[in-house]
Image (cartoon, rainbow, N blue to C red; front, side, top):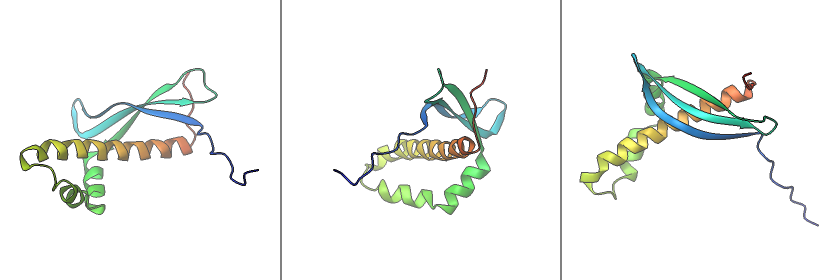
Length: 113
């Protein structure tokens, strides 16, 4: 008999639908859209998560993201590095949006009617 308990099955299945993208007419706001499905729901919902560029800049500075990514991209040829930095920023923003979404879920997200 195993003393280990089985892993807990998450209540929600979350996938990135698209993003990050700038909201049309609001160049200082970026959004990501996620598909969220609770196990008890018949279908999922799409949830848009908005984040201001100044929030991203503050987190980028606090986490020293630029120096971190530059350090890790030293092995990439310099002519290709810019594309990787852009991809890194996209992933960084998706990560921020995902954690913001998790906060919404902890506050009690409900399926729309």
